[in-house]
Structure formats: structure tokens, C-alpha cells
Length: 105
Image (cartoon, rainbow, N blue to C red; front, side, top):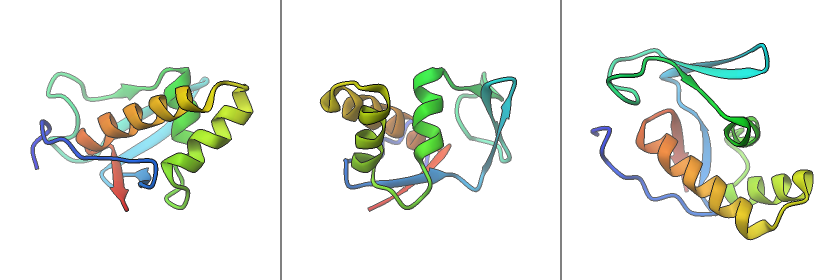
């Protein structure tokens, strides 16, 4: 699979961090380090998540669907569910395409 391959994710998809990356929280930031070549962009070796990405990443346990993750975050942040669903799907789609997340379902 190339980095340009698009993986379809839906609210029924279950995602978890890929076995090909290590993520650590450092001074409030989540830093993702690829363990194999070909992860993400050729220009970037490390990834740092913004606040939205961090909130989503922390919910991706390999058991919850993306729909469940959106519901949890909508309650936590008192935000519209549709907005969170779009954010979660966008994040998961991008991260699975980059092979930072593994998706099933």
C-alpha cells in the first residue's frame, strides 16, 4: 500500500494505533514516531498531534467504533455530535492512509 492509498473509514470502523508506530506524551504533546520506513510523509519523521487529534487519539483503543469515539468526545466537549463525527472521520481517514492507525470493520 502506498501512502497515497485512501482507506475508507466509517462510523462503524474500529481503529487503533498501528504496530508500526510508537506514541508518547511529552510535555502535554503526543508525539508519534514511525518504526518502519514509508509511514506518513517522506519529509516528516515525527508527528505531533494538535488538541483535537490528541483527544481523538486517546479514545482509539481498538475496541470502540469511530461513532462511539465521536459520542464520547461530543459529551466531553459539549460539542455537536455531527461536528465531532466529521472530525473523527477526517482524523481516522488521514491517519489510516498514512498507516499511523490500523482500521478494521
